[in-house]
Amino acid sequence: MEERYPQVVDRIQSSIIDLLFIVLLMFIAAGILDRYQQVPDWVRMMLFVSLFILYEPVCITLGCTLGNYIKGIRVRSYADVSKRINLFRSFIRYPVKLLLGLISFLTIGTNPKRRAIHDLVSGSVMIRLQPGS
Image (cartoon, rainbow, N blue to C red; front, side, top):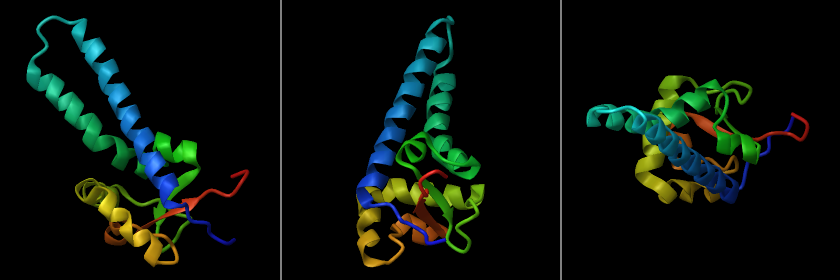
């Protein structure tokens, strides 16, 4: 089976979808917390920070994020694209992706498997699902 690799625009669109979904989840969480009196600020902060920090690494480890699902792309192990990356690798990948932002995508055009810097660091690769998969 020949692997297909997503274009940079698909990856950026996936990230934007995920960001919008996280913001939506934060609004929902804020609405729920507003129903309760005297919720400490630290509880709100921990909930919002946890959503932001945990969403992508946990979703990638379990399968895919909402953005990945919609765009038909998945993060896989570079060594074996049939396997997902583990939580440790996902927690390495995500902060590098956040810290470098769009700069991380500069390497996509320089290698045949279109790996971004955060993919190179974490031993991952993005693949496009085959139609009907």
